[in-house]
Image 1: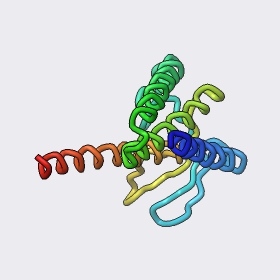
Image 2 (image 1 turned 180 degrees about the vertical axis):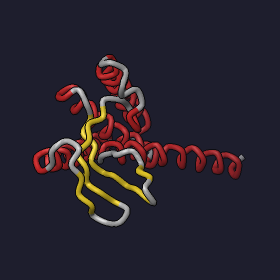
Image 3 (image 1 turned 90 degrees about the vertical axis):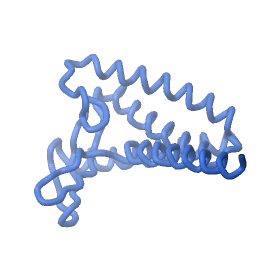
Image 4 (image 1 turned 90 degrees about the horizontal axis):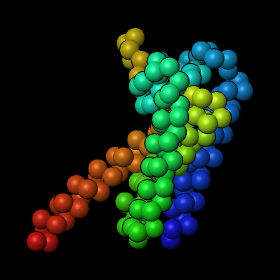
Length: 158
């Protein structure tokens, strides 16, 4: 069963890297294409963490966030081995693992993460993000749901 979760992480990495390559090969840095009234494709480079946190930190963040991603990935694989039969928990971990490694590849290869999904409304833009960020966010939401669901189950069983 562990192989299934690791395969899902690999699929996330492939989707992430393929989409980033497609955008990078068709856009120049900063270029934007309006798709709908609330969504653009844009080529952005994020040297920081989520939502460009610490993007102006002078370069140390590349290695700091890379180290964090490696440590987190090792821990996630350990958790997956231990909890591989817990489907929702393992699904969440596999999505986070794939997203973390997808962004790690960018950090190591380029020194920044390629972002390209730009949602906006009434002149306000949400920070640009990518497939890896989406997988991490969905995985985190599933972890929260799993935790809440587990607490409900404990209350009704106890």
